[in-house]
Image (cartoon, rainbow, N blue to C red):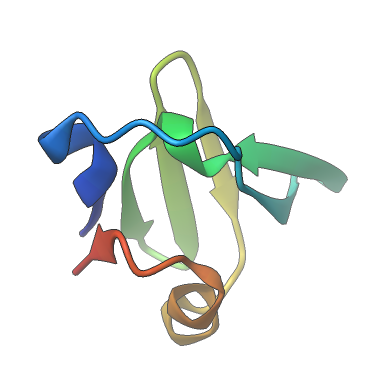
Length: 73
């Protein structure tokens, strides 16, 4: 499981960062400031945000390279 350290530290940023994933054959932009945690679920990676959940076929290794430093594993 990968958690967003910003949420734990109540860290606010003026620049929102997004990650683009493919979810159910559609491209989705996820605001990284809203991500509570990311977890591997069988062959998919699940992004859990404050209001939604998204699943994508992406390798955890390539995802970690795309995430900012405030996400911890």
